[in-house]
Image 1 (cartoon, helix red, strand yellow):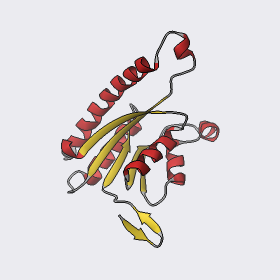
Image 2: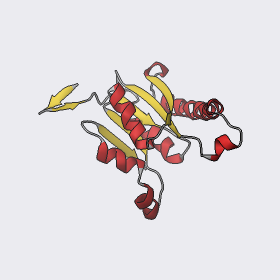
Image 3: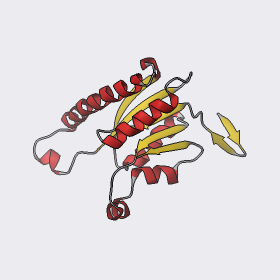
Image 4: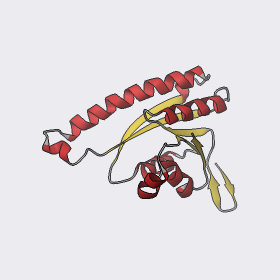
Length: 159
């Protein structure tokens, strides 16, 4: 880490990639892999965030442990595809870690930034969601929130 004035600058080669099962997530993985695939000392952390269970989930007999297990299974499939893309770009599997996490009482963007701060990632890579202007106005955009709320790091938003 270096400092610029009084602001701490994180190591840009320590990259957090937010992943899901969308084409823009695959684009972000491909872009990241192409950018850093053959650079030394790069580490990638794949993060899949899922929402809390819907309110009626428990009313239908579901448990939190069951919900987490279901979501972890989905995340494993996402990570498998992501690893294939990244290793195809020359990134060694030992340079890639994975994590799935439930966004508990937080937005997905808040959870991404929480992980970034906890672990000191200097770059976040994320796919741009294909939401309409009306949806973005009503619900916000993950990539927009990341760009506006991050400090001292790079945010790669890939369409």
